[in-house]
Amino acid sequence: MKQIILDYFNKYETFTKNEIDTIFEFLEYKSYYKKDHLLKQGEICKYRYFILKGLTRSYHTDEDGEENINSFAVEKWWLTEFDSFINKVPSHNAIQALEDTTLLAISKSNLERLYQQIPKLEKTFRIITERYAIALQRKYEVFMKRNSKSRYDFLVNSIPNFANRVPLYMIASYLDITPEYLSVIRKS
Figure (cartoon, rainbow, N blue to C red):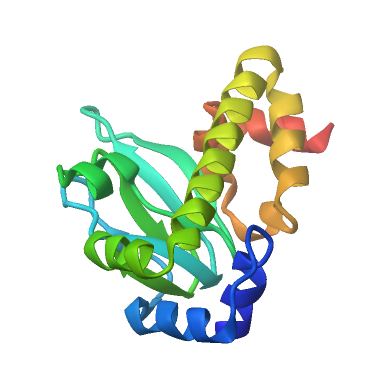
């Protein structure tokens, strides 16, 4: 686990073994079974998560009881519900494991302590968050400018083996199309 984090962080900044050891003192190892919730809609998000193994979705249930998927996260991705995590307000979304999932979690207070002890970690998380914001912007640009087939192709080509790991009805929800129409797209 430490090597995964070391390799990941070293893409952004050089960290020593001692610094990684310090970071690990603040991380909690968590494991969830398929369909378990890391966070339920309306709860306050207490952690920022790093996925070691598995797959999650972020979604909300609307007034009509429909589930609307906002995002997916896979191995070596960070995830959280930012508004809830930062502002300590109830989350508008839920986070659910779609496979048995193991991850590392860090609370906001522990993250702030680490920023004080290892200042370059704050820079690293700023870069990670910026890249996340860019990915969101690209997602919305893709959704605004492309047709459903092009959006589907973009999604499955962005995440290896994605189409094999996620049920079609969830992919359809994420793409904001019907499962029936997604079946037509996949056949063509």
